[in-house]
Structures are given as C-alpha cells and as structure tokens.
Image (cartoon, rainbow, N blue to C red; front, side):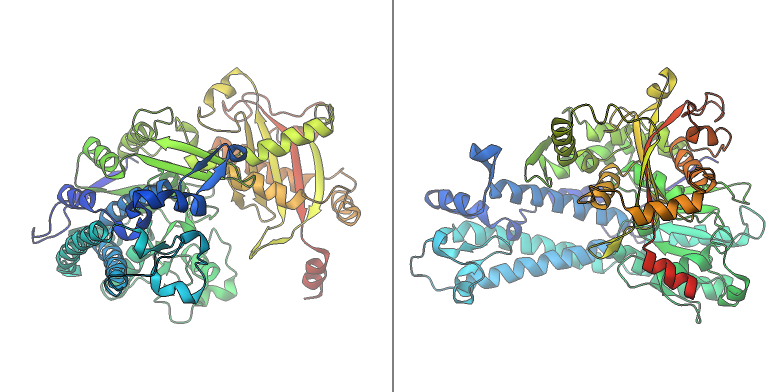
Length: 593
C-alpha cells in the first residue's frame, strides 16, 4: 500500500511559531557554552593547541580542538531542529538543558575576581581540585585569564535570552494544543474502529527520541485503554520501559512478545499475560525483531538516515505475516520537502565529521552541499521516494550512512595479514569456515549463530549493489541460532568488528568447538541447521525467502545459487562463514535445567 503522509503545524491555537521561524532562531544561537576555545585570546591559542589538539599523520600536522568544538556546535543545532520536528516536548526539554548549561557557564564567569594570578595552561592538571575555581568548560578546560571574557559573556547572555524565549513559548503548547499529537490520536482511533485487517488493532509507533516516546506514552496509553480497550507499552532502550498490562514484566523481551505473540511463538501458558496493541518505541526495536503480528508502522518523526525508516517498516514487512495488507504512515514537518532539506542544510552549515578509528588515525570528511559524499542530495532523493512508496534496502541508491564507511582499521589488518602470509587467502576455497565459541565483549554478549560472508556474482547482481556500499559486492550478515538476523548487511562496521573480536588471539583451531560442531553435523553430512541460517542471511540481502538451491551453496563444486532460483535475484557465493557456538558451560547448564 502507498504510504500515508501527514503534515501538521505545531500548535492547534496557531500561537507557536512555524518550524521555519524556529529554525531562524536556532541559526542565531552561538552555543558559546560548548565552545570555550573560540574565545581564547590570540596570544594564548598556541598553548591550547599544544594541550588539546590531536597530532595526525605521524606528527606532521594536527587537528585543532577548536575545530572539533565548532563541529559539535553544528551538530547541536541539527539536534535542536530534529527535536523540534519530533515533538514540542522534546524540543522544550532540549532547550531547557541548553539554557541550564548557559546559566552555569555564566555563573562561573561572574564568580571570578577581576584580577587573577597568572597561570600557564600547560602547567594545569584539569582534574586537580585546586584549579577548579579558575577553570571553565567540560572536557576541555580554559583559564578565565586566557579568554576574552567580555565577548564570551555577551554571546552567553544573547544565547540565554534567545533560549529563554524559545522555552517560554514551547511550554505554552500543552498536550491539548499539540496538533501533531491530535493527528496521531486520529490515526489510532481510525485503526481501532476500522482495522486494516480484520480484528487487527496493532500499531507500532517509532520516534528517534526517548523524550518524545515517553511523552507519547504518557498522553496516549491511558486514553487508548479507556477509549478502545487496548493496552499500550513503551520501549526506549534506556531501561524505562512501561506497559498498561498489570501482570506483564517490563523487560524488553516480555513486552515485544506480548506485542507480537504469534511471530515470537509465545507459549500457551503465557497467554494469560495479555496482549499489547499499541507499542511506542525508539529505534532500539528497529532491527532484528520479527513483529509481523502488527500491520501498521507510524514514523512519528523522520530519521536523518532513510535506511533507518526502511528498517523500521521491516519489523512488520516480513515473511510469515498473516496480514493481507500492511501500512506505513509518515509524519512530516509542515514544509515542502525541498524547503525541509534546504532548512537542514542551512542549520547544519559547514560540518566536519571526525572518525577516529582503532588505529588512531583521523578520517576527516568535510560535509557540505555539493561535495563528493553529496549526502543531502541522497537524502532528498530517498525521502521523495518514501513519500510515494515503501522502498526496500536494495532499492536505495546508497543504503549506508557515513559512519559505516570508516573501515580503515580493518583494511590495515587485512594489508598486514597479506604481507605476512602471501598467497594464503588466495589459496582458500569458497565455503571455508571456522568454529568458535561465543564470548562476552564488554557488557554485550555476542550471540551464538553463524556470521556469513556472501558475494554477489554475475553482471546483473553487480548492478544491483548500492554505489556507496563499502564491501560491494560482498555482504556480511550475522544470523542467530533462532533464525533472527542479529546484524544485517547494512551494519558493515559492526559486523566486521564482531568477526574481529571473535577471532583475535585465536590463531589455533578450537578443538572442543570443532568436535561439538562435527558431532552436531555428523562430520558435515547434515548441514541442515547452517543451511537454514544461510537461507535467512540470503533473504535479508535479497528481500525474498526462496530456499531452493540454498543447499547447493554447501555442496562441493556447487557453491552458488543459480539465477532464477530466487525469482530473478542473481547468484550468491558463500565466501566464508564463522560458526559461533554457545560456551560449553552454558550448554551444560541448559541441558541440566
């Protein structure tokens, strides 16, 4: 079905200014509280460069901290604008936080005496409490004697006045005056009174911001239960989950299962927990979840990366859905798209995006309209498409965000291996695999399953690869033991990082893991379990589940699925795969339970 596009002004009473007027105010903010180095006196700047700037290219030059601060300022402006698009409540909370930072900085400046003892910043330990009263700033500290206090104070006062005015206006827009909230109530009412599919009143509402999600839950959960008898839940990924189901646990899995019990295969003895029909969530739910019991996704705000919007819809646009029709509903700012894109471009200005890879090298990308990245043009094209149709990841002209392009550390690893082991990789056959065990990485546990490296082959296949995809024509996908896609191919850096973390320091085969795998597969004669996971991996890339010819990927001399086997999707080869088994202790514990 064609997406439904909704545009509303902010305030039902018409008293709050339009988004373009708010944008003009955002552009006027100096955000001086976040850029103390901007005000360092000229004859003191060299000392601060030496203390805070980062040496690059072997010490030949350095990236100045003052430039980092200006990048932060531009990103903060974009963040304020995006929160204004999301909800007036989120905007209000953000402005309130920035106002508090301004007032705190002003207070520190005002508290100092006119004359200060001369101190050299190079001699200052920023963590020493003895210097606390003389320093201003967060991670970067400046001595008040080294800054133009008059100019800094003037900019701070200007920001304080502008932010206070914006905050006062935003606080006047109560939930009763919130035009966008009213429109969402109408969507929910229509869904409950005239379901898209018979008896299905489930609705998944996405927002990029936890503040907005909490606001929506606060305003809608009780209302929906009273008016339509449906239960609601909130999932934000910050540990503040909520639900109106009185006996349901508030952990992530319990809520998701109650929202989509059929796709999650909820046991019958848990049916008494009840069902959730309205789920309000941030993007912690946008990947790796099968929620096809639901038939309607609402994007309450438009994410900066169009790929994320498609991933959100992918939660319900899945195989195994019993719904004949599914619907995408997008809330847009009340502007024409061209004006909206240009507005974002103006508010961000000249942005510098910095990536420090694991090698410590800086990859500095100057981000502005018309450069080779051309990100705003990409967003314009994809957002135009999203207004007219639901598009698949493989339809994107570029489905990868700038963050996924930062693969320098992996390239360096590869170059080092090739130098130390010439000819070794080239001599490995397709379908080479290794077996290891899962492990905890920091607070995260890498789940059991298989990490596949696939390669698209054939002329048609190569034409379908997104131009900006950094691993083209290869795809790395991590599929869990339960068939869940834990990392889709779009998350390039995370997938490679996971492979590296599982393999680093493990130069010899894991004899115990290999023995367990051989027993489970009868020495490779029964590869049905890995084949099922491979089917899921291929489906996540091509967007269709076609299991025919999957088995040929594991057979000698037949390591690809022939053209036509996937209803027109071109050939794939399995380059290699890594089997991740649960730790033996976990297996013993499970078998003894």
